Length: 121
Image 1 (cartoon, rainbow, N blue to C red):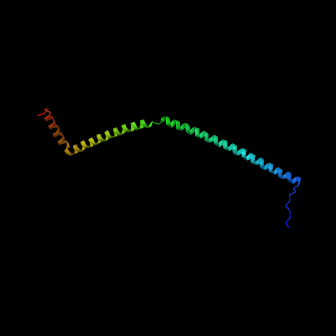
Image 2 (image 1 turned 135 degrees about the horizontal axis):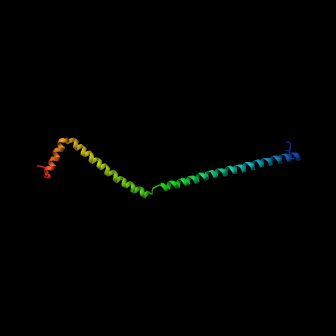
Image 3 (image 1 turned 120 degrees about the horizontal axis):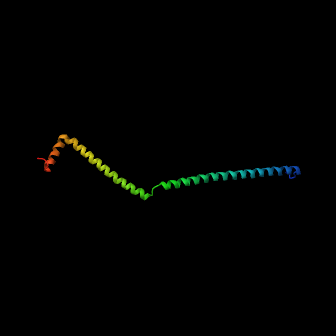
């Protein structure tokens, strides 16, 4: 048969084990307290960043245009762009006509318009 396990422990051994357990618990408590301090510091840092980000967002919103204002401006800009494109097209057409008929043709056209207007014979 097997020997019975040692259930009897000396008083000195019991005190040593008890002291070791106390040190272990103290170490755990100290580590837990340190972890809580680090967590609190991290939360404070994150909150500071969030507050700063919120302030930046508010400043950006203050500089932003409402959607309706932007849409109106965009519509006006589209009208202006269409007018400019039409003007450029008209100018290109006039330049193409000038190239086609030349200076002599322009003078002849002006003379004919003056004659039709009754200014010249």
